[in-house]
Length: 92
Image 1 (cartoon, rainbow, N blue to C red):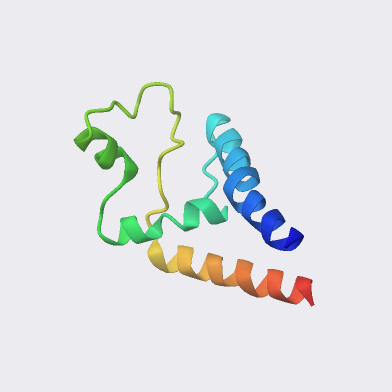
Image 2: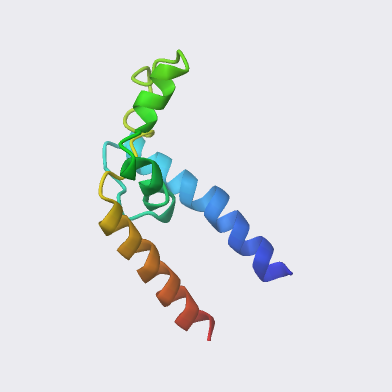
């Protein structure tokens, strides 16, 4: 049970905080799993910027590229697969 909670906290909080910090510093964290998970919307050419614009929000205001999803679904799929394989062997 502890491992499940640690995994959820890592993916939901730690990776998000690190990605946000890297984005605010002007670096594109394409290799983070939370950014690679956004490739599904990129497959259908729906970016977070377009989604926020359709909801009436202004994404450029102080976000510094934090909402930019990975635009290459193949690279993102391979990245998520490599994270899964590496963590699987680490757990063994």
